[in-house]
Image 1 (tube, rainbow, N blue to C red):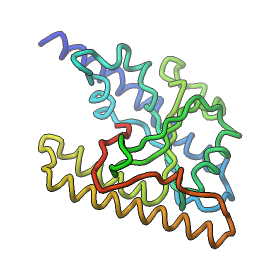
Image 2 (cartoon, rainbow, N blue to C red):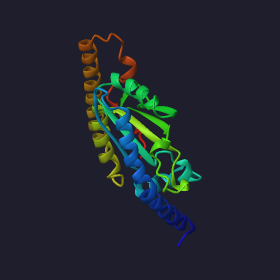
Image 3 (cartoon, rainbow, N blue to C red):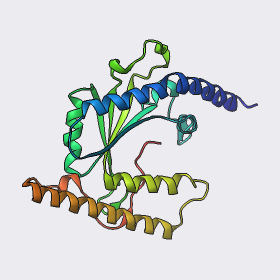
Image 4 (cartoon, rainbow, N blue to C red):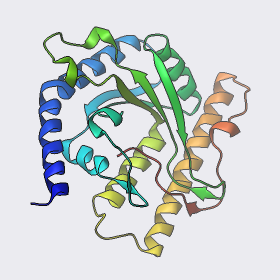
Length: 232
């Protein structure tokens, strides 16, 4: 067995134990905690949390950029071993909900994922890193297996629907790359989802009497597909 294969096997075994003993129960507890924090808050479609699967973790852990490993210590460096997601109705709701969450959970950083050019359509979403709330940590879980952070994504219904379908088509069949024509068709659906998202947000603002401009939350342009910006 090659040394690299042995390292991957050892990493998989270590993460599998962490997944079963720590991450799965913590994800369940985190979901309940966030739901409690946002109880009664309007225009939230769903709240969920999950532990990163063993396969997804290992695939991410061995990633390289120009021949250099992206993660030196994957068990401690990968921050989305626990991921939570809040799906809201409109773009106007994203900042409102994120600010509400920040009232209860210590915030570390925020990253806005958008296509790399204004003439492109593709993945849009806000990803946040928060400190794992101490209130959800079971004292029976070994401290060495508890990640200090979790990732939170806040998306609109249209952002969520498009990104789930795009991820399924693009990653499940990663051994068979999309053709140019398939990319164009995917870009077309991204443009439609972006447009519907923007119009629903504008209509909500008009109906509710909110006068602020939504353009900063819905920037975009032509119908070229932007590269994926999501966590895996």
